[in-house]
Length: 186
Image (cartoon, rainbow, N blue to C red; front, side):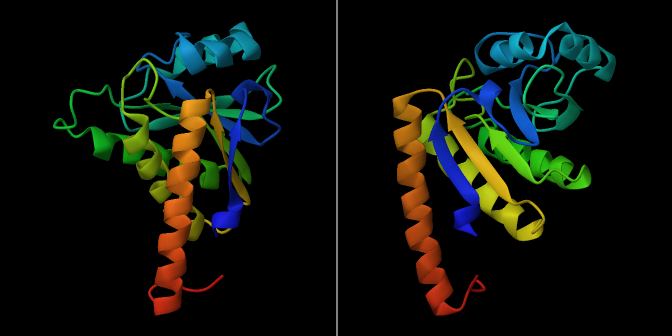
């Protein structure tokens, strides 16, 4: 199952996948970082469709068209703002990934690209976020076998290294679990 996850360094707006994920703000309007880049690349039609959605709660996700992006769809999810880890940030971040994967499944999306949600302006520590992200993505791939590939598109070297390290740890852990019979072999 881990072979269906790829970690790359790049620009999510250039991904040739069915859907990309936007680390959105609650209003779903153009902002900075990944959100601003996605809105600029998609064109003004994306903001217009987002305005009609009425916002999005943290931990939830909503789907729009991709407009001028190579991806057919954008799944917008609102991650938590980091407040030290004692305000349910981990649970909200995990929910972002779960809800996004659920929407992807509901809409027949087979290839999906995520950014590192909440680790930019929202301040969630990337070392912690990447482990939550990978655990939820792996669980989603187990739940939704029709999802062929999930790419994690990292904007900078530090984020890329953190995700690669967490991926290696997860691969070693799952190899051990598979050998012990706790997880089905693929």
